[in-house]
Length: 338
Image (cartoon, rainbow, N blue to C red; front, side, top):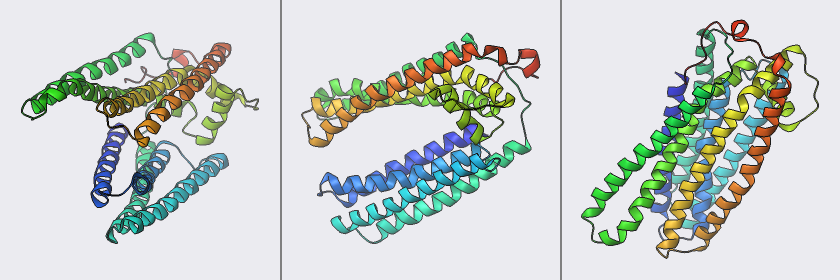
């Protein structure tokens, strides 16, 4: 149920972003990029802010400990603050481009409604999980599991690329500029395939995220504490249960981070190909150059950060492997099936 809710929420968020972006550009066809970026900022925070709150409250018990509740309140106020800035941004956009009054009203009311709905659905999903608990289990991640997940990502890439290439080829056959589309169609198909493979990285990592949650008994405060110890080498005092949780966390998180890094790389490569199409077609402007530079800089920053954290987690897992329960001690069944 949680996976279906996750996929459904992503589909809804993507639809809102696409529809909102079209609406923004339709309302300001002759205006500069600056006001449009303000509106895009408002749309983003009013869509993904509520989504992050819903994910947080559905996945973690944010009231179990004082540390969890403090973090939740802090995150809640950050999202509310961003939505307040988004409201100012969309009002500014409407004034500058002389958009109708209903546009900022729609954005602001939609953001408020999404926030309330996300918090409600998050609590309902968490209560459903707590009312139907899975048996506690522990099993290390096997090489076969990793290979199977990588195969799913690779197959997703190949299938989507093939389908996109065929569809774009059929659509482009009857167009007046079909000759100019010959080079663009493979790039479009490649971008679609990269986005799909990145989404597959997120999907195959969901069972690993559940193991991380189970390792700390759903407590947000505990996972933040052990993450500081494992990933940041913080010298924090851990009791016996927290030491076991940290060892489990360190055994799982390198694989999870690897798939998350794969998602970022595939996403940014797909976005980069889109910018490359603009450059090849001669549609060069400040936004295209700046966004392309941002994508390159982001990858140069993210890749070393993830690599360092993965290395630290592997070292911690190797040094504390004796704290991990055996399969007979920690599992009443098989490992989760991804």
